[in-house]
Image (cartoon, helix red, strand yellow):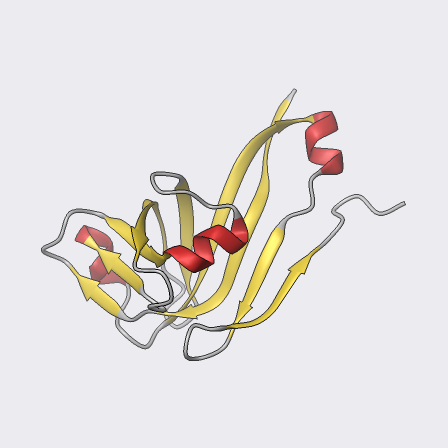
Length: 125
């Protein structure tokens, strides 16, 4: 059986820009991508902590160290600069892979620097 499981997450990043006229995606600072293992074009789910809106999109690589969290295209109508969002990245894994995978989570500061990076065991003994 293949399961859709949490691969990684960026928790409470702050939206820096919303560009409805730009082609769709979410632009994420490349440094954050590297820290989580997320890659450009990977599918993600974004949850807006301010409005409760959720939307699925894909990743664009942002400038390293920029702190960019940019909502593009139609999704830009679902978030505004200053909104806090949770960026959820999934992976499809078999039972053994899922049992041994440790999701990487970045807990963010209001300036989109990393407050804390954690990894946890989803299947503790």
